[in-house]
Image (cartoon, rainbow, N blue to C red; front, side, top):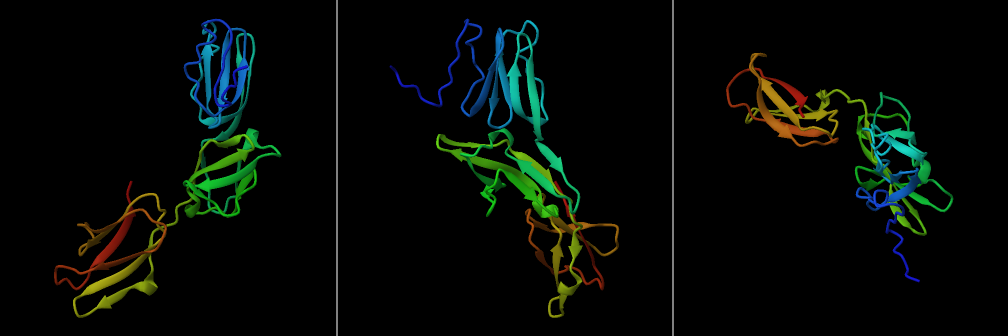
Length: 237
């Protein structure tokens, strides 16, 4: 008897039924109808193939992950899972779940923007008192004795705090006229551009900082002899 690779996908039936052109690895469930097949990928997406006489193998555009699938004679059913994108207000509690992948033999490791979250090893991830630093991409790596898969990626958009100059960190150097400031509240999603003006009408960019959630320390040496100078900061996509 020939031993089969556990990652190999097999299909049986007519030539049309066996044409599984969209199948790749990480298939976690397959359902079969009379003349079509439906497969669920680990990322929550569905692929289908076979007869299209009644549009039974045409997959609609989805904005949520799929948790369960079933196929009938000329139809298919899918149970919606979590949205791929979620938005939270300040102070909200957000829960992500591994859903259909949870079982007693599996272990879990949740990740944020590709990095492991310390201590996040349950089948669900609960984020309490959400703020703008929680914005990003979440997913779980699920492992059992047969191997590992990753859950669907889920993005979270948290509330963005206002950009603010810290008044306790403003210093003036009389020797060269330099002004040192600290800016807080950056979301870490977009670059921060600081503008300066002497008349509140003509704003000139004087400093750009790459995306960061840390405080931004900034120093400016005016090129003119104006007795006053104004600053503002904007996060720009």
